[in-house]
Amino acid sequence: QVHLVESGGGLVQSGDSLRLSCGISERTARTYAMGWFRRPPGKEREFVASIDWTGYKTDYTDSVKGRFTISRDGAKNTAYLQMNNLKPEDTARYYCAARPHGTTSYWSDGYSSWGQGTQVTVSS
Image 1: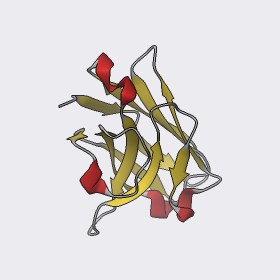
Image 2: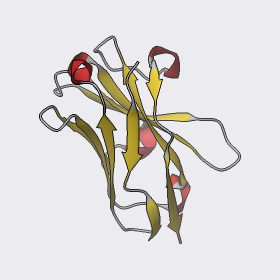
Image 3: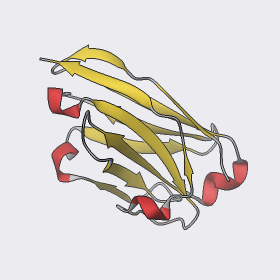
Image 4: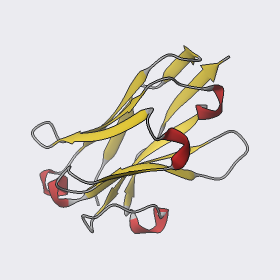
């Protein structure tokens, strides 16, 4: 199992940007796909974005397409989620997850390791 630590959350205003980071403990996780999920207040956890092990293929939920970008830096063992033009409906706790099968996935079941999450709050 891989140990993941998220950082970069905070309180921002509508239209602002944030970059979330996910530190990955194991170098072997370079072959893992990475994902970002979020849990809005009072709602179920939902998929946000995923990137395959090569870094070339990415997937996004429709509500963040064109605003969020997922990326990874193998040398730094870190995954990122750049969030631009944030909206109040993006308010949630954001979780990083690692998937041993190196392809992208919308489904949380395919991810074996999870971080503790970082809170993002967007005020209007």
